[in-house]
Each structure stands twice: as structure tokens, then as C-alpha cells.
Image (cartoon, rainbow, N blue to C red; front, side, top):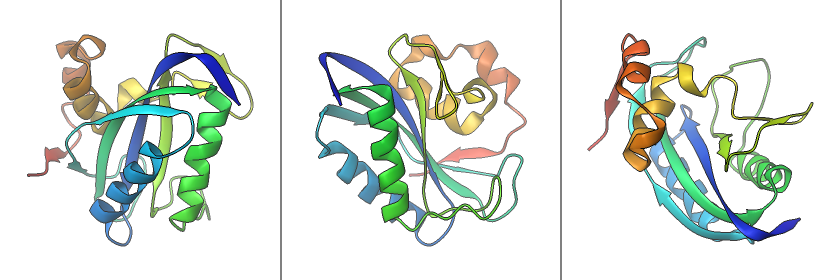
Amino acid sequence: MTLREEVTAYVGLGANLGDPVATLRLALDRLARAPGILGLRVSGFYRSAPVDAGGPWYCNAVAEVRTTLTAPALLDWLQFLELAAGRERPYRNAPRTLDLDLLLYGSARIDSPALTVPHPRWRERAFVLRPLQELDRARVDDAALAAVADQAIERLP
């Protein structure tokens, strides 16, 4: 379903199985070409230690998406891309081939069984805050970054 007006949304991307960098690039390419996506800007890629999970380190990024899709329709597209990348959900926070989270959707506040926006933990994760700050410094202040300074993360070249 599409809206008549354009909305700016932010999507968190992560992967720690297979070839994470290649997986994120493919997902971004597919997302950019999705119906209802008008534009896409992407942060740099980061390598980060798992938070509240095990497994290998992650490759992460954040995408700023200009869209006419509704939030539920955008979430459906993100979940389709996860499945296309072989995403399985054997247990909570399991290692994954691709994880796409709808972090922010304009100024919307959504709390439904299928979707919570803003993402409930977006301000608690360095792997979200560091790349998001690259795209929109006004959304991430120094205090927010200081609060996650103990989380291991490095920007990839």
C-alpha cells in the first residue's frame, strides 16, 4: 500500500553469516529498486560485536529511505528481502544472514503486534547510532553515543 506523500524512514541493516558485506550491498540494491522507494542514502559499513547475542561479529549500516510506502508495507518489503537472503529465525537474536529493522518512519509512533516505531532499542545500540549519525547528525547527539561507548564497533574502510 502506498501513501500520497513522501516519508523519510530509517532502516538498520545487519548480517553476520555468509558474506555480510555482499549481503548488505545486495539488500540495499534491491531496496533501492522496490516499488514506492523514491531514494536511498546509506551510511558507511561498520563491524560490530554482537549485542545480547552470540555468533560472529556483524556488518551493519543504516539506510535513509524516501518512500511512499506505508510503514507496514515497508516492513513487509524488508521481511521479504530477509527471506530472500535466507534469513531463518530459530531463536531470538540468532546469528543471521540478513536483519532489516525499520528504525524510524517520519515522526510516526506505531505500537502494534507486528510493528513498533520508533524501534524500541534504537537508542541503545552503537551499531545503529554511529551509522545513523552519519546520515542525520541532529538525530544522534554526543550523549547518546557516550551511552553506548562500551559497545565494540569500528567503521570499515
